[in-house]
Image (cartoon, rainbow, N blue to C red; front, side):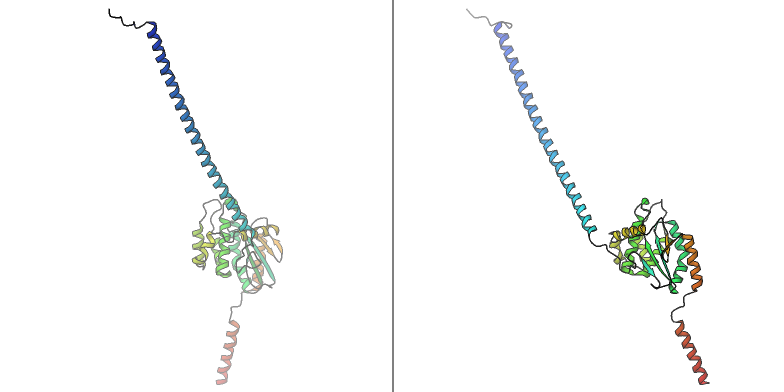
Length: 288
């Protein structure tokens, strides 16, 4: 006689199904555990890579900062570069050193009052210097740095021109800087503009560009400003006449009075020409 197949819900069948279900559940847990472990390992590897990257960036920044600091220390530890042709260490002069009137002017190239003073005083000061009646010293300073770095760049450019082209060209450049002065609150010219203005004043671009762009006399400008502050600089322009600080309008009045008293400078060669004319006249008389 044939045997009957076990019923679907027989005890043995249900046991087998539970076992199979449990095995599948266990397999899913194991798979999930493996996936979680792999994800955790991947996360840790990524975090380690990020830490290494951040550490490398921080190290690079530290080295960069250390290099900049070292460069700054080395740059500032040596002697201050002083422009050739500078007189009285922090300026440029015209006239005889032992002249009766000693006039010192401290000015910021961005200062509107300095521009006005320069416009009014340039002619009588030049007259006094050429007549041998005054020794005039111009000292660039930086007190308007709250309006940007133009004052400092212009003063450095002035020093570069003085260094490479001499006092006469530097004074021409100074006059041009005041004549073309930008406004305090507006946009400021760049280094190319300063270089072009210097070349128009008589400097050579090949001799000034690198030093203007590289701020060669930055420390000299800073020390000139500090020296003026030690002298009692309260603003610009600051003027000293024979060692006494004088208010700008009073100084202008004194300068104009001195120029009137000194009279025009005698052109070079006039005395010789007079003697020659007299000699020729005598010779003509003798011939007659």
